Length: 205
Image 1 (cartoon, rainbow, N blue to C red):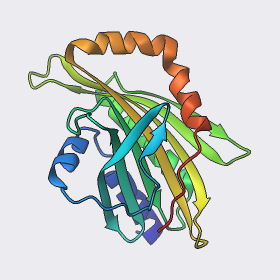
Image 2 (cartoon, rainbow, N blue to C red):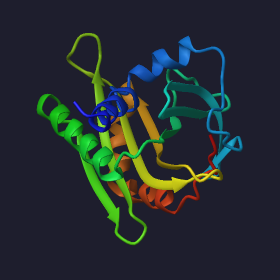
Image 3 (tube, rainbow, N blue to C red):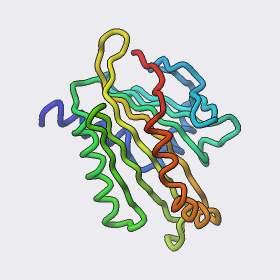
């Protein structure tokens, strides 16, 4: 298997695994390192988000997560994600792999849905998708998560090129899920537009 293909699979496995794994990550990493030197806190859509978890599992990959003050990392309402791949990996390959992952998830979970967008002028891509997880009894939905991911190719101050994922995850739990889903029908495009227009934080390695 080529190094490029291996890295793509690694990124998909580490960065985009089942969203429930965020709980474990947030609870087990006590030391926070800002690998990407992002000026913080991150201001997004009238909210202020602080670094809550970070990881640098390989030479070519970084992952950082941000939540608002007072929010709970293991039961957050909104989370900001910044993932960076610094190899010669294609942005199209990363997006295609994510879409393929969602297709496979949808085979066993009809709640999974997604929509894709691309901007030929900027070369950027976006994926808006919905995930869910059942309660322990397997009969009811315990968590619903809506994600808007924006992918962009950048060049940092040192001239190093990378693919950046800027993502926003919003969650609803238990009895609030129905209201959350109903609200999405009328507000779905709002978050997509905000993420699309958002000026990504400066990143350096």
